[in-house]
Length: 348
Image 1 (tube, rainbow, N blue to C red):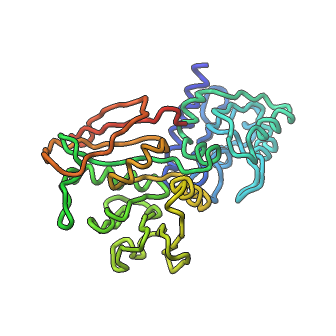
Image 2: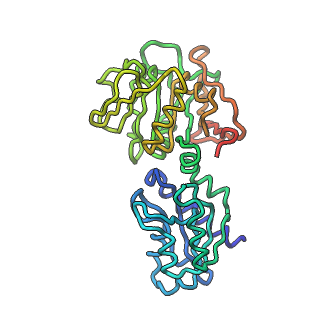
Image 3: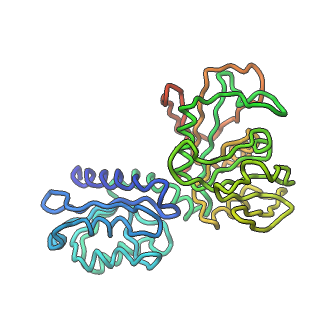
């Protein structure tokens, strides 16, 4: 089993290179081994392009070796026609005799069918090697296809005495993040599909919600603006990223802006998350403000949270959200700052 885990670990490492590029598809890595040597590797590079198994098979210089090789793949090979042909068909065609799989695909069009098809073709199939780690790798994909909502990450910075900002109606926010931790936030934005803020944050901070301090694609901006109070010349209305405005007044699309009417009285969070899921937003980061963050916490609809602890004391201001329902918490220093990482109980 140690040998199997060694190669599966390599699959996971490869898969992570697709972070920020493959959504709404999952990150997947594949390794091909013959006589104890890795002869091929691949990962899913970009949504709509070749899957990990295809890239790994293509990388093998001597294709005749495939007939006595093992292919390791972090996720069950697909068995349906999507944007690309089924990977199981290629594996069978190349006569690869042994397949080791990290975890089963939760997507209804696969969900065990790939494994079944390989076994029906008299291939040796082993499932569940480093299953926990492989499922964690695709936790956003699993959440989307089992709960039909985005995987939700909460993020805020707070002072040493528990405030996220000073009380204000205008002016600059309290500077609780450093230039380096701001880079870290922008890196995280590259890795998610959507980023959400409330009306108060949009009005006071005029945020761009882009990845201007990191390399990558801007996430979709989701602004809760019930009465359309945010001015059209605000930064969120520029054309740098697709933007969704959740409101009670307009329902239309204009350039990169989509106005969506929602009911703010009943099941608001569930309705919004369903709308985002339908738009292939499988991962969502909520950056504020305090009321919006607390509403997701109180509804117990969140998956993980990152809290940056500043050494600054504000003495008074806007209280940080009260996080409840977390089971795992770790603290690590990043760029000299303490970052608390929480996972919600029962999160995938």
